[in-house]
Length: 137
Image (cartoon, rainbow, N blue to C red; front, side, top):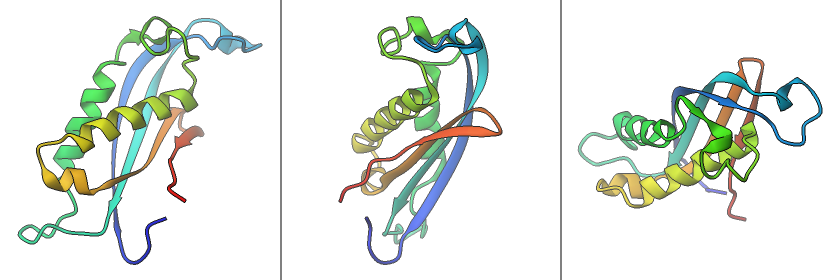
């Protein structure tokens, strides 16, 4: 866990996709669609000396859009890795996390490489969500 003072930045986006939950006994085992909402949060301890920002929101938004574009308007059960992995909200959150972690780690902006991914939350409906985090303890 990060010690001391830090900032967290959050961006939100969404995508539309269809899926069927494998091995689920109920309606969701049949093909259906969602407008998935995604919330991404990063944290860091250093602001840029010139703009005094942790990271430009546009960097986070464009990275998230890149990851979500591969899922948008797709049948998730036919889209890797969900062609073999169940396309649950939990697995979607982890998949988005991993895609964003890779984008931030290799980004041209050194400030993007300094922030730490904090959480990714995926909601199928406003009343429920799944959050994925990785903790270094």
